[in-house]
Image (cartoon, rainbow, N blue to C red; front, top):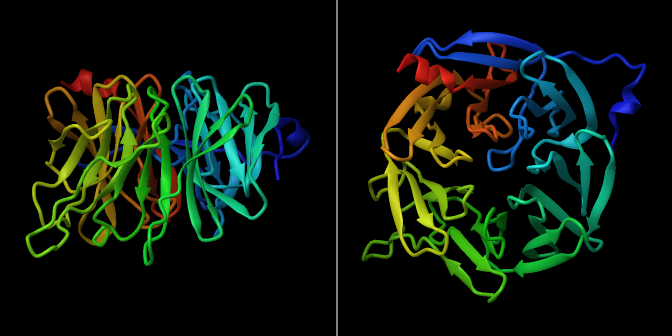
Length: 371
């Protein structure tokens, strides 16, 4: 299943291309990375895909109909690339702050050093268990947030990366027709707090956002969604992500919600207060920048043939349209914008003229130059 750079010596690499695009709406320059005729994606927006130098990016390319592909380390300045791993599923991993790539296959989690290409097994869960992504990791790279399925149970847990010790944090036992607890995200700064979601059709899920405290075993619905007097559920929310300082969880109240206003929200880490950040667009996913200055979001648009990428200043709450690009409606083709570790670049996925998937990179220095 796992193949290192050394294993590719003597084999022909499929080189990747850099294209320079200019968005017709905003004149924003976009560096596009990919290959004509194949599909190339980045990690899920909550799982860092950039290396610590904010120059190299880990891409999943040659994605097939089963969402399997090969993982490539790509230099966004020179175009140099190395294939590191093959036959892995899209969205199966996350990069730590010290450039260790953690990924799962079945019920096993591996650690892959993106510089030395050394790989080790972190842990294996009990037979009959299936891990799912995205994974999450805290700021110092010591603890992973994970979740898995075991029979009829969906379990939220953590893993100590040095010892492989697995801890079950929550098994909420949500009832049919929406039994899934997923998107386990460890708080990056306060690693005793673990977010998880009650998964399902958001029009039917009235208790989506949970946080578990591993020190007290308390589990709290930190954003109680409102209902009408008739009992009708009127706030449809999802696509959560912790801020890097761990103080807030960002999420989107979707534009379909009957109760307005909709837009990008955030809730204090233990649910003490929440607020609307910006409602200028029909937001879909949101990711705060590591330095805490901005958030980036993509949008729902009529017909879902395109999506906008929007930058939000978290101090002024002012939004700025960066671009509008074609998209796929299904994973892994959602734009899923995210920031580089230095908060100076952002990346997202879009569809080319032949409806194949590419990575778009925007250097935010353009904004200061224009403004």
